[in-house]
Length: 163
Image 1 (cartoon, rainbow, N blue to C red):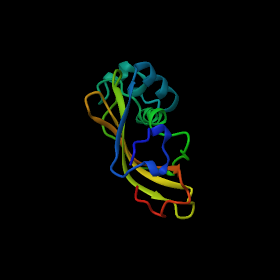
Image 2 (tube, one colour):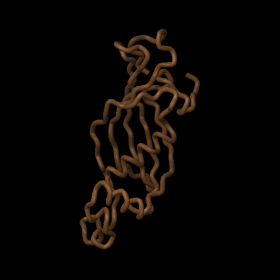
Image 3 (cartoon, rainbow, N blue to C red):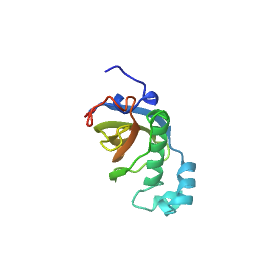
Image 4 (cartoon, one colour):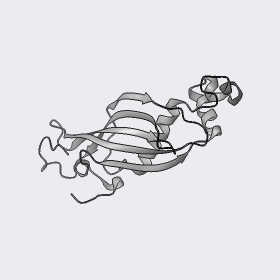
């Protein structure tokens, strides 16, 4: 299989077992406070002084903010506009470590499964283990997601390509 850049891929271009890492996102204190103030206003996300007295011992980003950062990294580096059709959902979401101001995050995608739709042969569904990793190599969030992609050759691929 020839390598096709991620932003030019169709369903057939993803291989089970493939791993991609991408992105370099600096998390700032201002971003943590701004996001949490709007969407998750708990003191350990919004107030640096109160956060020092929390079980975190300092300001931490909302897990939902971390997921939004991962989504941004995926949009910038992995999800192709030419074939992406959205997602039917995620499973097994886990916030594994706190994200703090100054952390640098990158994303990792591992292709777990790929199945062509039997009812709509113009598309397939990729199952991915999606993770964010900090500058120390620690996974901070992990979830299994599914994404739908158009097929490059909708009439020629088998009903279940397995890749």
